[in-house]
Length: 227
Image (cartoon, rainbow, N blue to C red; front, side, top):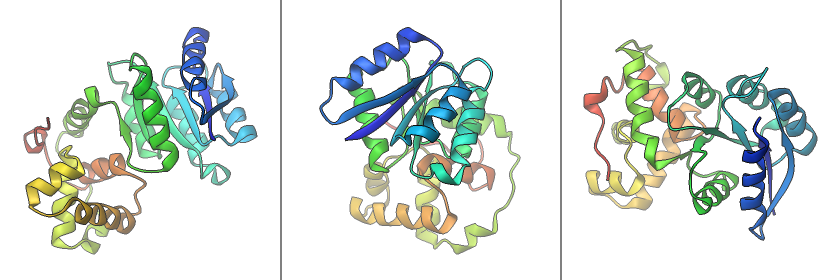
């Protein structure tokens, strides 16, 4: 069973998510929270596999809540998915930096939410709503304004791994990277895993942020178009 907790200040949103998730035989909703403090207590008490966490909540907001949970060593196995509207909130970026596994739109179809929670529970790639993936990358690149901090960890990567990292930062999927580099998708997965391991990154979203902050990718003109 995949154990899921829901944190949102709107009761109707919580009820809707619970109904969607409990319609799946492999999901168990272990609790709900209406604010950040309740969410932290819920995560500590239940240790869910996945926490759906609203970005905007009274008191402790979504970013501060995610940071408190993810920086606590006792919560290492919890995957946090941020819930947001189409307009990106600035602290979503900060939440991704501290280890959130991605973010979902509240108006996504139920089957897409279910698939995202399953993916998060498996601990695979980060989850970004397809409608905002490119927008997230462009917004982050614009906000950085060309300012970057060189990171010595880059020196641990091979030339091919650097190439793969730049393509990840461009928003390409493994299949698209494979086509671009004319290599097998399994080989791409190996390169991605090594990049994350060498740079001590949790997932692809953090790899994107690392690439921009380290100056490996500069400006939205470097972002590849994806289907």
